[in-house]
Length: 275
Image 1: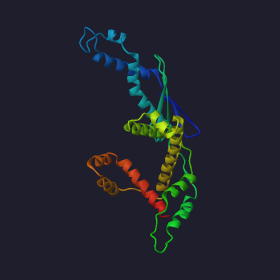
Image 2: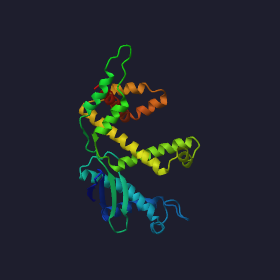
Image 3: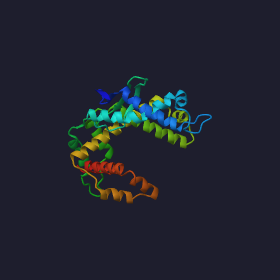
Image 4: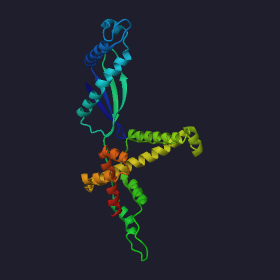
């Protein structure tokens, strides 16, 4: 196996991986043998048909799929290790070449955590939080406006978001919207008509939202690391115990890492509110 790496301007990493035919052929023979032992042919019991007869009637596409299922993940892992990458998303894979008696080639797109720069965000946020600290006789002290804080962060952060991250999030938002629309008994066309938008308008709106959401997530992660904001097991357990029902409790238990991230994000926002 050998691979080449290319980095796009937006931070997307493209790996082109070549699997030698010798490796493919070895795995292919294993898959064919497995197919023969379980094949059902007219006039023969399962797995008892002559190998030649099974091979003559074999579905080459299914053989390729089984070989790829086994070889592709391992080849990708080896390429990642070879180039010392630290991907933050699952790869987007495109098979380029599948042929008998020749090397197989595929490309995999992924990305690492982009470089994040937060300029003088503390001063700008302090200007906002200072207003909430002014005591006015007869009035309760109000918390700093979170929307204003988020706006400052988005205006301050310098980061290039790989397009594939934005596309992943946009697709997730669109899928979520489609599920919600279906639950209301509407079609997507009916929903779009009610909002006066075209499909491209909806996707554009979600691209803006996705970009801002990802920027904010990266910014808060960066701030949490620089300020040593962490989450301990006690905080995670307390959050799980506050679940409103057993089903939610099970869900939180099985997603402790995600829960930890959410708690850390909230603690970071609280830190910013108190600047």
